[in-house]
Length: 203
Image (cartoon, rainbow, N blue to C red; front, side, top):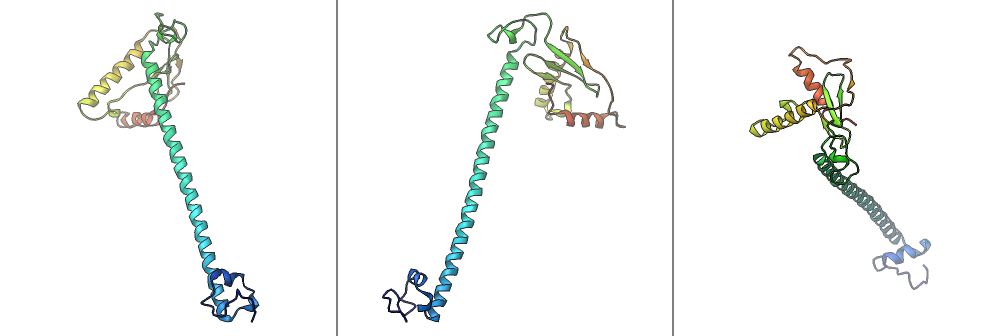
């Protein structure tokens, strides 16, 4: 046995650091067993710490992505609100200059700055070439049930009819190349087209 004062014969009296730093040839079987147990315990601890760090990293990434999505969502809402304000201020008429009040968005020409496009489904969509607002056919099923939904539908239909009838010297575009049909008086066919086109705007 070594005369090193750091080595204690009683394995229970030796600290973990003493066992790990001792020369393996100076340790008894009992000390070697305890040393092996310490090594296993520390390895498990390190593995657990590694797992914890990886979980923390994933959690941080999720939080970062969540914050990014939230920020993008707010930006989209802000952009949509700004767009709606621009469209509300636009007269959809030709004439006028610049972006100042009474300018580009406040056209004063008798003709409207509208592009009327007939889709292959034989539906007429209209877009203002100045503010980008798009009018498309409205159907009662798209609105909530009840008096409030009736009012929303009537207002939307009135706006669409205005756009259809608004005078413009722009040439309409589009042609009928196909039509969806169904045996229930085209109710299912129209619903299919609306579902496909519900998030579409003319660009």
